[in-house]
Length: 166
Image (spheres, rainbow, N blue to C red):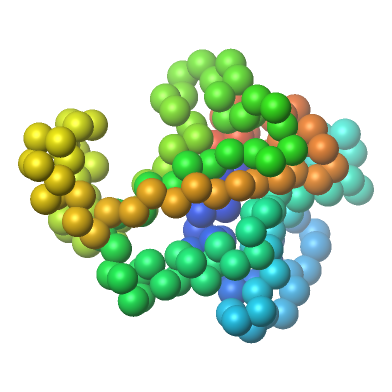
């Protein structure tokens, strides 16, 4: 399985079609219309066999449109993604993730100001009386893996990087 949240975020924000992970033998589908976009999806190799696929997709079919709106219309400088899994009782990004700090939270900056915000203390909003939080957005992303449990089988590094199962 080569599914990674970092790749998922790139697919949500940039791709209008299915993103194929390197090393995968499947062919990406044709681009989709943004107004009727189906859920963003990543395809990886299942550890149980090279023929099996593990799919990681958003449960909201219009999450790409939301991100596109944030980037183009609202001109967000910092987007904080919070990844949760709809088909798990406990988020697999929080279970025994040794060496990884808060893997369910990812950030995307679009300006130098957003980059500066990432270097500040976690409570920069309160300390600046919320003036520095202008242009920042938190976006909850619900993910679902298919077949169920394939993402939870990955080790920590495989969950957050582009490493293949051996």
